[in-house]
Length: 461
Ligand SMILES: [Fe+2]
Image 1 (cartoon, helix red, strand yellow):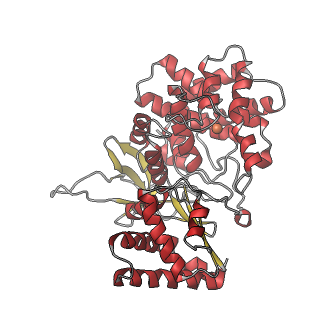
Image 2 (cartoon, protein in one colour):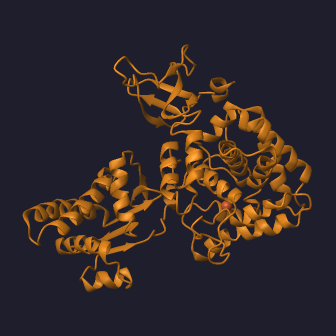
Image 3 (cartoon, rainbow, N blue to C red):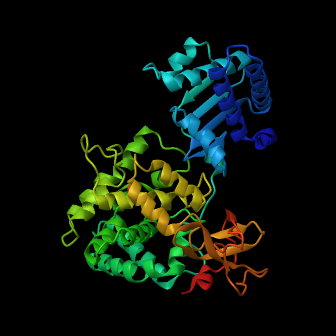
């Protein structure tokens, strides 16, 4: 990648395009405001293309990517800009060398009209009709990010909460057994379910290790333990009784068991899957249900959740279960936990998302893919700065979130971290207000977990 593309801010570029789009809707052609904005945009684009020969912008999970590299966007205003494009059905804009000022203007006018009159014609046909030849628009174009592959560990590293560690070990064995054709060991499943409900979901240290940003690309068994624990948080919020709680934990733990039939190269492929690979990957839902219906003694909804957890409350998603098929409540809970867990973990092609970003994505999916009440219950339980997160306050203090406060999703209690990564005495309650009623502090950002900070020490109950 060239040094220049390092400097280009994709959000600023998209902002330029969005502004130009609005101006073309507001003013007659040739208006000075349009001309000025167009010159700015043309300048930026041409400068980038001179060194990089093409410009590729993608919006994935609400974050802008420039030429395949994620660009973190933090403010709500920036998220709004990205949404303005994605709401039009445009997730990617690829601009090739040779693009002209006229084409940029025609693109802006096209994007403006797209809002009112989405035509049935394919977008590339419509662009050609407007003599736009060097720009293509689309829904996500697979990112070729192989060059950026980072090897993350497969599981959490460093000291773990003992019950969490045991759950991981037992679940890993269970998944290995299934992979080698030995079948599901019911007694182990029951042990893990009990462990998750009684210990893991009740341990601040374990929750912190699961909720905060995870610097590992976990394998299925580890993802499953995490999703089961997060599902239990939702179950608790919505008032599940012990029987429903146990059914939820079991189903969540086994929801991805079908992935034991998917080759590891596909599960861990560092770039976008092609159509055939995607079909194989999507089949983990039906494989899972098939594996689980064969096991005597599992709860009846366990195979259902494996089958349905990628289906939306709006009836979309996979596998195809016929029109109007709404997933079971347990499947809906697992879907929320699954998305959060996946986003806050690392990927070979992408750094993990911060919890607050993941919560915003959940909020965006509420009402279509996800059940709004369950998203609310989850975000209420975990808050934007969950247990275990390393955060910075507006007084430049760095601390670990050791307690969250109900109805204060942005103002947790933090333990300050000293120069030797030790816990300083006297925790700071960021929800405290001064005499004027204003918060004394705000948390301004989540940081990546600091090396050498032992969460089990900070979060020991
Ligand atoms: Fe899945």
